[in-house]
Structure formats: structure tokens, C-alpha cells
Image (cartoon, rainbow, N blue to C red; front, side, top):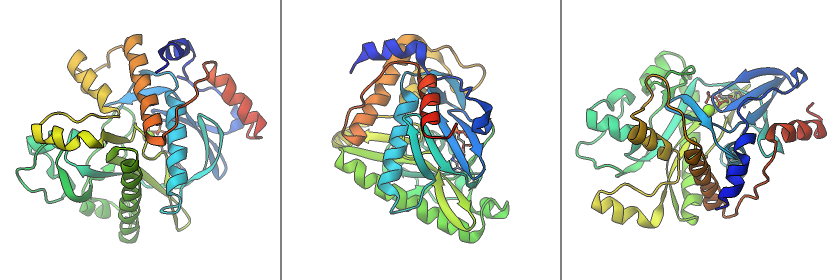
Length: 319
Ligand SMILES: Nc1ncnc2c1ncn2[C@@H]1O[C@H](COP(=O)(O)OP(=O)(O)O)[C@@H](O)[C@H]1O
Ligand SMILES: [Mg+2]
């Protein structure tokens, strides 16, 4: 891993986006900045790192890794479910079909781990209205992947678990759309797991967002990135599970565990500052994930990300 390139990029990370207003109406998410031009969105993936629904810092090349990985996966799954991508004019930018989003996060899980395992131990895992057998072990595979949906919360608030009955009662999706959403989410997950296996990885769980244009369903936002998914190293799974050891992972759970272990932070109050050494180490994990998933290393080109984005958007005629 080229850590000197990561250090060199620390002063150039993309934290704030301030592109000319002619690009469209500007919205901020936790990780992406979005500009709306009529029926299309210019989605700029920044280097911001969010965990426990807070933005903590920026990581060198993180936006590029996420945007490229999402583009990779959208391309690989477009025969399964149509997606929002129209163009990728810059490593950090996706031009997408503007959809009417469902206010739902479709979380698909193949294994009992992470927050669901923490809930299961406390007995607070019942919010999804799903039957869970007693006596499951940490990191145990479910007989088949399950969907544990959540409502999309505002900034700083936690996404709330929700049951199918509640989704239908609140009208967050019609019965027909709910059936289509679950089918699409499970089909995407199966495709993701299949590819991950060929790369020696387990796609453990992930989160999808969907939207509609007219009656057409599209998968939007990002898919199968380390921000939205958990990956484990496949050939170590059985031995580690048998011994009750943590799995070797390739995802954001690393930062969550660092925050809990080193700083006692799990989302309440003001997040602690993140030292540069930790930022570089975490950036390295994002790059390693990219390489592991796609099978090709990312060529790092340190420099001013914001200026490059503006140049590429002009060249492609979006500005
Ligand atoms: N094609 C699309 N149409 C409409 N909304 C979209 C589309 N793609 C992504 N979005 C929305 O844009 C935002 C992306 O910014 P992000 O930083 O991921 O936000 P969040 O803080 O909600 O995670 C999200 O609210 C996502 O739902
Ligand atoms: Mg998001």
C-alpha cells in the first residue's frame, strides 16, 4: 500500500463542495453533495467519513473509491435491477436519473452480526417483526438472507428499524411496491454474494435505496460499497466462527470499533477528532477493499480533487 500517496493527499481531501450554482440546486447529504438539473442529479461523492450517523473527518481518496466501486457494481448488476446511473464524468461524480425515492433503507443480511447481533443480545431485535430463532451465535448465517428495513432519518438521527406491517400502514410503500422492493433487494444481494465469492469474500450484509420514475423501479444512491456493506474474508470464516473469533473484515465496522474501543464513542454527543495516522490507515482499508473486490488496484493521483471535478464537469458539458 502506497501510504506516502495517502499522506500527500491529506491536505487535498474533498470535504466541502462549492461548485458554481449553474450546476443546479444544491443539497448536502452526509457523504454526497447533490446538484439537481431537472430530471437528472449530479452526485458528488466527497471524502467525508460518516459513522453512527455523524460526519467525523475526511479520508484521502475515499470519495473516488466509493464512486468507482458503486459504478463497478451498478454495471455488474444492471441486468438484475435497473439503476440510476447515466454517466460517470469524474472518478468522484455520478450523473443519475432523478428518482422519487422511497423513504426506506432496504437492509439485507446474510448473517447475524453488527448492530443486529448487539440488538439480539439485548432482546431489542423484534422491531422488524421477523421471527428469529433463539440460540443463534454471533456471525451465524441465516438459512436465507433476511430484510431488516429502516426508515431514512434526518442528519444526526439514527435510522429507525421498521416492520413490513408498519411500512404498509404508514404508506411508505404500496403493497405492490413493497413486493417489488423486497424481490429487487434479494436479487441484487444474491448477485453481490455470487461475485464476492469469486473474489474470496463474503458479502455479509448491505443497504439499498430505491426510487421510481413513473412506475419504473430503480436502485439509487450507491450499492455494495464499504460504506453500505459488510464484507468478510471467506476462507477464514468457518475457522473463526467455530472458535468464536471476530471475522476478518473489509469494511467500515473497523472505524466503529476504533471509536468504541479507543474513544468510548458510539454516536451520542460530539464525535472525537480523528488523528491523521488513523485517517491514513482507514483510507488504506478503503483502497484495499477496492482492490480486493474489483481485482485491480486503483491508480492514485494525488492533487486537488475539487478543481479536477470542476474541470471534468465543464469538459462533459454539465457546467
Ligand atoms: N437517483 C436518485 N434520485 C433521488 N435521490 C437520490 C438518488 N440517488 C441518491 N439519492 C439521494 O441522495 C442522497 C445522497 O447523499 P448521501 O450523502 O448518501 O445522503 P445520506 O446522508 O442520506 O446518506 C441520499 O439522500 C439519497 O437518498
Ligand atoms: Mg447515503
